[in-house]
Length: 229
Figure 1 (cartoon, rainbow, N blue to C red):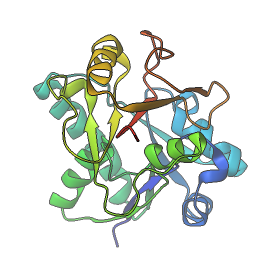
Figure 2 (cartoon, one colour):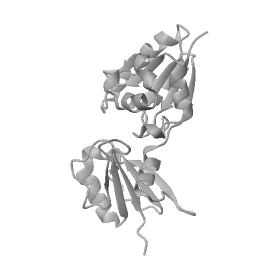
Figure 3 (cartoon, rainbow, N blue to C red):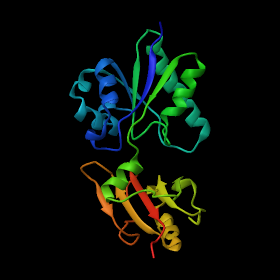
Figure 4 (tube, rainbow, N blue to C red):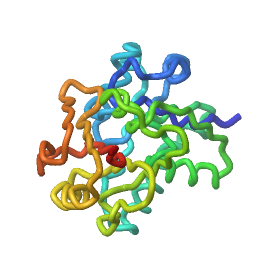
């Protein structure tokens, strides 16, 4: 029988946010795939190994999927990743693919899962705590209340958005274009909080647009709420 591919969310950074199911799957399976050229240097591995120390003794499979905008190159990388994973599934081995946050939210893992499914293999998703839920908890605020709407945007791809819909916004992938994102936030008049590297040792919370540095890191998540009168 062929193995199963598990896409496992490890949460945003704090190893205590990993689910019991994620821990169990890592413990029970020997082949662990992680996104990056050197497995031990990936953020997903560094989070998970704190919760599951025996991860260090598993068969670690680095999967190279660089963050680029060239679609043809992305497709080639995703095909290579699927080939690598399929080589284990053919042997009847399960593969646990670790991914930051939740695998259903802007995760490159999903491109690999779709290819594996097309090749006839069984896959399963294991939810993890999302970065925006963890960031809201860290900032000690709600994301939405009563009938409020929540809009989740990949900010780097939506620099034309004026944040003018009712409800609250989550802006992800803001780091490389933070200067432009800050201008959008200022014009919106919204109450803003940003959590950089949520749950990690380098975590930092900014409580206004003016506090946010233009050179904020990749793992920066912004919550922009309707200003309360």
